[in-house]
Image (cartoon, rainbow, N blue to C red; front, side, top):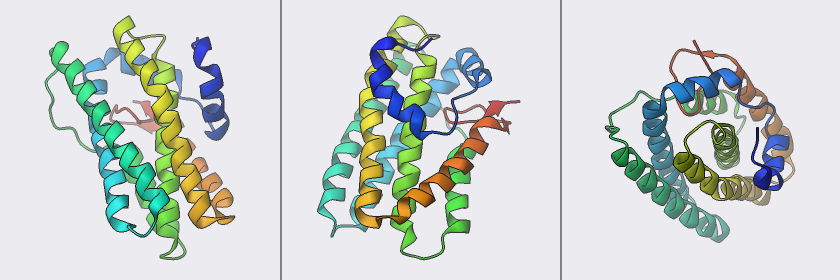
Length: 209
């Protein structure tokens, strides 16, 4: 059952994504909370790195620099907070293989981009999709985890929802009318990853096998 206080915040996320997280993933997450936390920490690091890479690559775009610098700081703070939770719970931070989700999105973008100029648009749209899915997954987990972890995830919803919107707004600002059709295509592919079987449980994985 979703938290009523967050419905107004989350409704645009549900409207944006083409599917909700399957219950099978949520059940696996509850059974693998240590793995969930480790991969969540990895996701926060990768999100900060993506923002920093965009800042280095597109120094001529002040709106992007402003939004990405804020996003990078927030993602690194979230990384620190997840690590602190892991320490409190005795979870060792170990290396994990990369998620099928992010690598498949990147491969799909590479194989379907028509022009080199699409690269910024696609990077921003993939960022929006990942942030939206993260937000949706936090909302899915909140009713099932313990109170402290639930409060932490609830606290992340606002920033994750803003990150999704920031990425989407930047894509529309720099890439114009073509964004609508492209994001629909990417969302359709993202849906296929979420509802299909996935051999490795991760924060963004599909249905565990």
